[in-house]
Length: 189
Image (cartoon, rainbow, N blue to C red; front, side, top):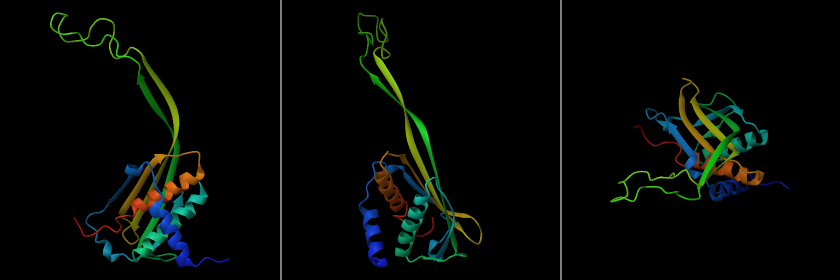
């Protein structure tokens, strides 16, 4: 059974629209404010260097759908813009400190030695700190002017990865959608 391209595109667009992420604030974009993006209409793919080759195709497919919806056309080579993507997955240490008690803390004021630290400790009493390793992924998508080779636009996503491949896939689509939500940038300035 063959899916019609429009139906497949609509399905992926719906997935992109409704996929949610707890790290939405970790998607950032920036662009060259001196460029008029209305002059660009074609693009070609450059290097897509990711740790999971399945994600390489997912990234390309998602961006292709989003750019096509904005009137851009993919060409095999020689497009006005070259798109490159790279990810980095690594472990980061996360420390959490819990304060079980505040100790004797601050002096009691007027007759007890004035304000300041009282005898017997303070905030360091009754604390517990735990350190855990967290798998974190970064995705960088760059768009270059094919003629000048200058960077035009960059999207960056950073977030904690789960042990659930389906959740990570939804996260990838949601982050790409957020990156391209306001693309192409309007006007100069």
